[in-house]
Image (tube, rainbow, N blue to C red; front, side, top):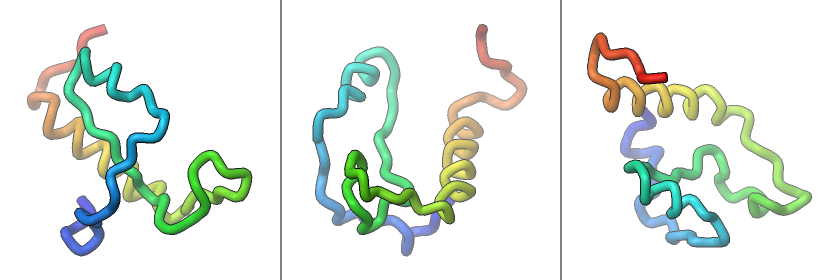
Length: 77
């Protein structure tokens, strides 16, 4: 979706205080930072989300769904 040039594979791994790992015990997943760039830390009062990342982020999520949900199969309620 983003192209290899837009992915930083050398970015430092972050653990922080996220509890996302607990969700991964129930289903496969990935934690990604889309649009954070070099701005202020996420929980900083100075953080300003990169608005230009909204549409690429939406395309990324749509592609994840497209690849994970077999064609013609509706999700269960």
